[in-house]
Image (cartoon, rainbow, N blue to C red; front, side, top):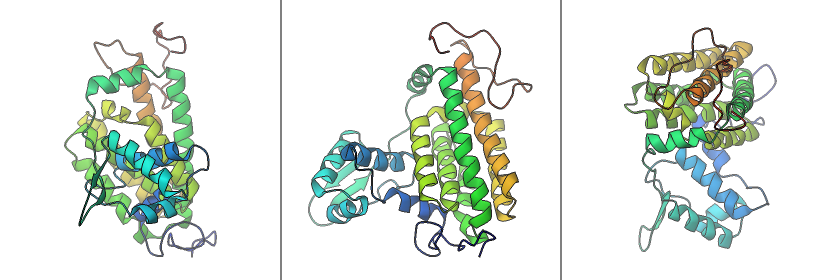
Length: 291
């Protein structure tokens, strides 16, 4: 029992999932909860698509049968079939017929860097900073609550994710694992709402972290900071866990802001004296009114 009276495991009164399930199990549980009643086809597509992009659903994994999955998501089988069709068109799901058939997850290859840079150019610096504020608030709250509610044994999955991140050979894989860590941290807070919000934020951010996760020195610092977050959660140091999670998010967003401000021919790192919000006082490009 944690100090706030919550049961230790995700199956307790404080959160979703089966008793004894780890953080990744809770994150997966959040994927299969009823969707919003508005625009249900689009919501199902977004929910499952985001989970696939973040690696919460593994490549080749078979989804539950249509009737079961529709029941889990709180939608009709007709709605689910339309959503699965859209996911097939996006290359995220493959359907096989006959014995041993069903719908299977297909994890796409990382997008080309030039496409990611084009996506970054669509964001103004103010929009990036606003996203960073939102993301830091969610991840910071998740880390704080995880430190209060999570038992040490439930941190094994996020700890494995950190080591996979540190060992990943390419920025696309690192980006997926980076996002997965923050989702698993939210799941460790035993809050289905925080978990879904973190998934939505990671989906909005998309593959942008690929652009800043090609620096081995920075990757090493991110891994060390994620380890420190887990250590603080383990020690029930809630405020330290919150601060570390927020710092990690703000540094990443700060680097994206610096990249957005840089001329196309070069992409300097944020200067050491630049604050973690990415506040940079260099002249902004006039290409976009918000930049």
